[in-house]
Length: 202
Figure 1 (spheres, rainbow, N blue to C red):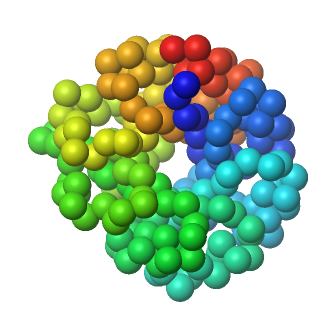
Figure 2: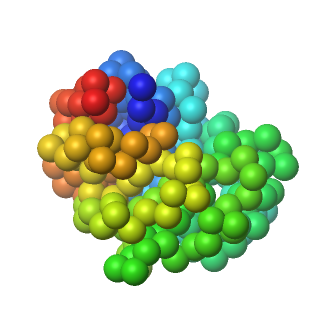
Figure 3: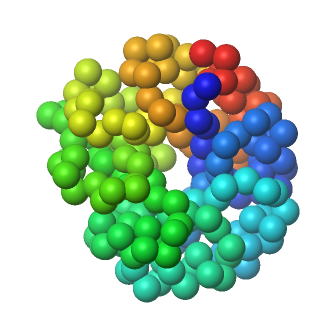
């Protein structure tokens, strides 16, 4: 059965919907410029509220800053975008935290070499963009380098295409955010439930 992560959680209502529908993990954004960014105190409260593996999604955060954020929130893992991503991944793995390492997928393929992914980290293949995710745009799945396996597929996944994505790409897991929203940063609980149901039954 496909592993499912719901990213960009900003409310307990969305968190409860993900938990009750059978999500395997959730993501909380700490990148300040994102419409889904949450204060560490709010994330700590939500992490304590639901017993789900939780990832802190950052952009250009240093390994030390990410480690501090993990300690403050009680998150179980990180998803570091941008500068310092590989160094932060190695630091997290040394601390026995889970790591989803983003691999931006552009028009000609992956912007990261499979050998750059530290042992123990899971590649997260997502549509390349200046915003580092949350674009709602699907990249060309035929460009996936199978040396990244096992990987998590992201980028424009929603209720209407996640079943096809799983059938065609056979990822270890799927990750969705923007297409589960009614507005940037506002997740729709019913859409979350429908997405998880589609992914788990694919």
